[in-house]
Image 1 (cartoon, chains in turn green, cyan):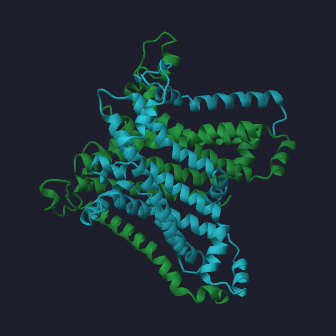
Image 2 (tube, rainbow over the protein chains, first blue to last red):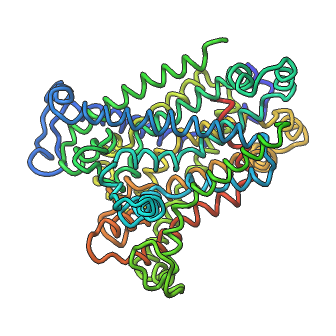
Image 3 (cartoon, each protein chain N blue to C red):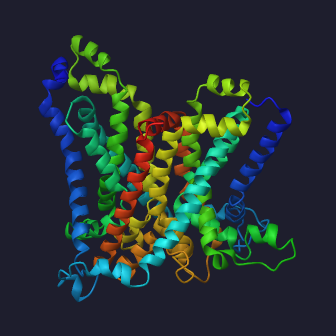
Length: 296
Length: 271
């Protein structure tokens, strides 16, 4: 094929192959571990105790438990709410609005706002969790600045409104990604197209809705794909802020999976949860990829 | 772009408001970190000093900083080196199905890492790798699909004509790669290194399970363990510790900021 034209490649196939070897070994390990996780989901393997050694195959029992016992479906619902409000509504919409607003702003404003937003994204998950616990507790910033001056008794937000608080914390943390992606997307729209729409008398709203959004549709789908999947499996922030509590209010699937696998030690059941998550994520990805491919 | 000055002023005010909201949670962090008599309250410090920072770089905390550095730099460098060695052939040789293969890997990595952690844990336990080195290898395995895909995309943008010209001039494969391909995709490599570095620096779950003793904790686990303890919590120390923990990830970003947009273009367009 075309390789014939590239003698520095064809004469060094062995070297190139050797270069690929370490990566292929690690990829092989990844596939192997994934297959193993899949196999575990059909066993009653435990982290400690008798069943850590003498485990046995239990067929689809773990998968039945997903639907018959409390926990999984509840966590799935919590996850759906968390993903919908923090990623799809919060991060995407806010990220897009920011990108659109900053597009026409002076570069100094643009860099200041950009840096502020990026700080949330760059901050390690555990620090963000620590920060938001401190901001939303009874003596925190929100109580001291808003609730108490308005004459209300201080509210322990992180305890009383746990799910909204972690949702907001995740919006705070993740908006930068959507912003950067949309900002790059909007930069790729030629000014002439927007100007032409303006000359034809389109309002700003029409310019965004009818001109810009259709052009950047692939970017929207890409963004949705990434943030949905990330948020769906996002673990450290919620776990460090609430540990899934109070009760099971913020127990998303990722937290549920961790608690079942490593606190309760039910590795078999935990694997079934992660396989179920993989299936859900896979279906969502296919949906978004179709959205991405579909012609105008 | 907007012709209407009142409108653009309104936008500017809204943006400024957003920026203030966005940074406001940091107030607590800085007020407590520099307060030598911190009580965890949000208040103007009565005594300002750097004692908390001194405490946060010595002893156990300093050790955890080194652990995090080792894990993050080790993972990033290993990922990039292994990634480059495989991504260049993947980019240049017409191996059938390579793109489908890479995308499958990336989708595979979308599975919650806690799922793969169970077998990883068992393998590491059997191989005696429940330590920093094990964490580095495990993170490299988990990183590799993204690394390969991104690096291949960057190598794809290097025009092959340059390599042809160099070959005609008598350059060897090694020279072509080190003198042409790598310098031309420097921005991309920096981005990939940065992503791996911050990813490993922030990683919490894997070291939480792998690191059994306090000496081996990286900062993420150390911070979690410290603020998980109820009772007499030293908030000033924790705030200073958080700032030190956050600094490298933030700092590396600003160092590489110019390269970042290039990197994002690669992610977005190829999506």
